[in-house]
Each structure stands twice: as C-alpha cells, then as structure tokens.
Image 1 (tube, rainbow, N blue to C red):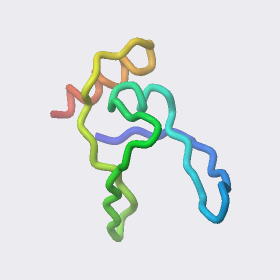
Image 2: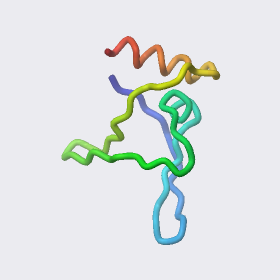
Image 3: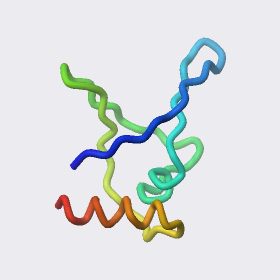
Length: 71
C-alpha cells in the first residue's frame, strides 16, 4: 500500500519539521507530544503506524478504507 501526500517542511529552532495531513493524523490517532518511530532504509523513511480510529472527515474515511483493503 502506498499513498502520496505533499507536506511542507518548516524550520523550528535548529530542527526541520514535517506537517502531517489531517486525515493521516486522525486515522492514526497522532496527537501533539506523541513520539513516532522512524524506520530509515535505503529506499526511504517510514513511520510504521497502525490505524486506530474511525474517521470523522471524508478524506480520512477514504484513507482508512485504503488501509483496510491493503491488509
């Protein structure tokens, strides 16, 4: 399963920050202050997460349907 989202990269202090789109945040139940594990491989950077919530927005609902079909 693959999805593509464009996201802005911003500078905060000495770090770079990537914005996560609202549908992704909602479906994977990501909240401010959460820690995420990054999987770094020769093919890319991944954030291994499992869908946890029922979506409230149409975009999130479509994302969750795609996640379920890929299992």
